[in-house]
Image (cartoon, rainbow, N blue to C red; front, side, top):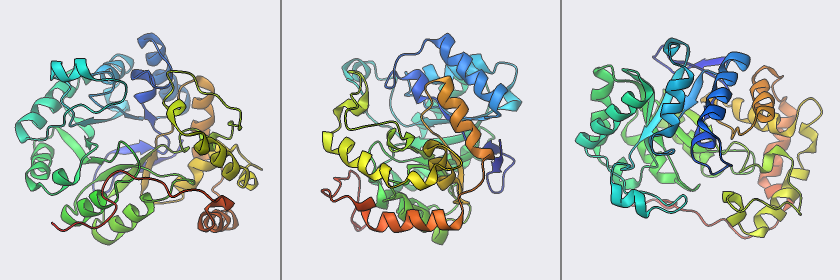
Length: 344
């Protein structure tokens, strides 16, 4: 496993991290706490993964308590990332929540401090390595008090690196662009980016290059909701509780067609590994967070770090395919978020 270090910090993370949403939320199948803890320990002990990304809303604190149990007595060996912003303490809202629907968001300084203190308690630690504001909207980007609070928390030693996670659906273009412009000392952004879904992630990277010199990226949905694992066919059927079951059939059919154009990447590695190597070719990517939900995937994805980099011809071929939408004609994607510049 190779490691990358956040600029101006001593926080070094594995190129392949572990997003704990697959263990704590039930969206990719149910895991017991014992199963989750065993997998977290396996990731660290067998494969060198040290970056674990959680959120207070993943199982209403469950992901954080799983991490605390898994690595009790090894705090100095692991890097904890977590997120705050959803009011998981509003009992009425929590009871009314269905599936992946969003809870109310709160970013007042007092609430941010309360939420962070609760995270610290669950993680059994006195500092968070990487704190991100969860699925922020434009109104939050444009509120300087929010970012001043994060700077204060860093000065107090409660956090080491701060940033924002954008979502929940791909399409948060100008929110991320404006964050880079307005808060150029931002340390990291979590976003969707992968070979098949490059917009608006690529534009966000460009904004960081121009305005935020030390901004790094931790990447989720690295495999386009499993498409780039190379195992889907036109006949694939997802389980009833799987979030992919609710996608239109055209997503599956067109995705399978696109993936077939990428066979040239699989001579030395699996397609799933090549998808991660493409992301890691970008120096600002600090860690990739593939969806890991079994030991076989853990072994496959963790091995990606030490595999040969994609060569120039492979990178150029991917760029060419991107220009032609991988040879597939389809309706333009419907995005959430701010996809057109809106005045302050």
